[in-house]
Structures are given as structure tokens and as C-alpha cells.
Length: 189
Image (cartoon, rainbow, N blue to C red; front, side):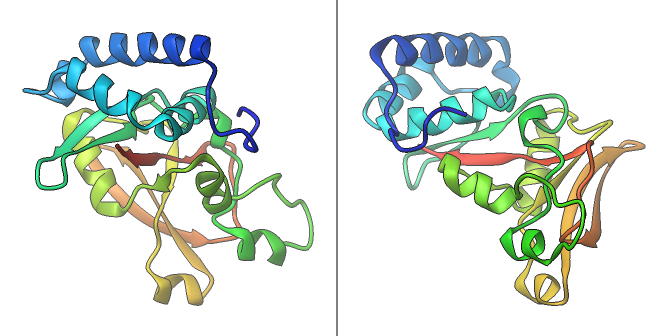
């Protein structure tokens, strides 16, 4: 991840990121039928802090792409579209409370704090299912998703994956972490 104190990209970084995002957009039109890259780019250029967040998603292996458009809000919605849970965001527990509760073998970070630092949100279960409608992700990994407060208050957290042709939603202790579990994020622009 880049320096989070300066949430702006240089002109060179911006141009490079836009090239990567445009190429991914054009190669994956099935994710955003009927949308035009020029409109997306104009929106991104008007919101440089969102470009910074997309760069963070890219730098951690998320391969962000436009996955939805909210016409009422005039918002493009980017999701991490890497085939597996982003490599730079794995081996993390769910949140800070879970991290602090671990006595031994603490992971380096947690999903909720990382997402906040990147300026993105963890996918909800609904987001995750919508993403899987576009194509199948997490066939070998799993991803933490936003967890309802009643589950979290009891020490649990939810994660999802795709196996046997279905999306599965599971639970685990929020303090657990695995090399094959990370998190996917979303960003509205």
C-alpha cells in the first residue's frame, strides 16, 4: 500500500492506474454491460481520493473493476475482482477487537482497519452474492464480509467463498485468520 498520509496520486501514478483500470474494464465488459469507460474515467478524475483508494486496492492484489452502477445516485461501484481473495489482504482477523483479543500468534492486521485505511468497505453478503453473479471468485480462498452486530457481539464473524457451484456463507471466531482468507472491498465513485 502507498503512504496513507498523502491520499493523492502523482500525475504519473494516476495515468498508469487509469490505463490499468481501462484495460481491465474493456477486457471484462460482461461485468458492466452498457457502461462506457469515458464516463467512468470522468467520474474518477473528478474524485482523486477515489483514485487513491483504487490504487490501494490494486496494490494489494484486488484487481478492482466496475461491477455495478447506481443510476439514482449516479455512482459507479467498484469491487475487487481478483480470482482469489486479494493476496495483500490475507492472513488477517476480522477487526481490531478480535486482533487485540488474541493472546498468541497475532496476525499483522485486521480486515476492518485495513479497509478503512484504504478508503473502501468490506463487501456485504449481498455484495458478495452480486459479485458471484458476474463470474465465480474465491474457488480456493475465502473472504471476510461485513458481519451483523449481533453475531459480532458474540465473538463471531462471517466469511464467504464459492465451492461446488454455490456461494457459501460461514462463520468463524472473529479472531481467526488463515493464509487463504482475506477480504474483498467495494468503492463507490
